[in-house]
Image (cartoon, rainbow, N blue to C red; front, top):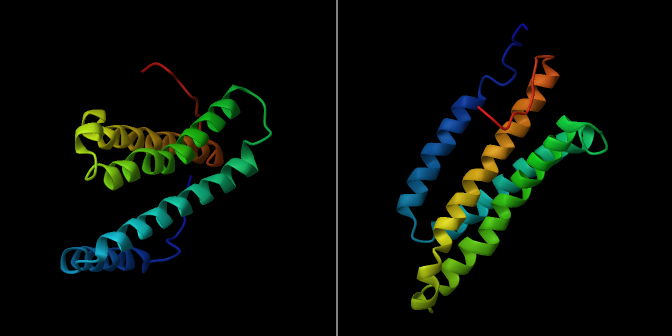
Length: 145
């Protein structure tokens, strides 16, 4: 498969500039953390929205084992990240200062990190399989190495 010409040659420069500006603002502003959380949440929701467009177009009503796996991977990816954030990260940050003896043994932050590792992994597998199908390359889901 021939590679297409880069459509937006300015995009890597813009992403690099964004990363530098973000890092400077994060370390310089005392009020940047709430903005960081909002920007990060918006990015996650945008990724879920884009993945849902792929899911809806290609896998929502399709039968077969591969489509079933794609649906499972999509829903784990789409619900895991925001679910982990809302059910583990937010309660831990909001309530742990008030009830540390109660919440610290639950290790909610660690559970959040486990869930937010599984979720993007499922998303990457979902999109990689889809990309192989689009490029007409062989692709399959395996449970063993």
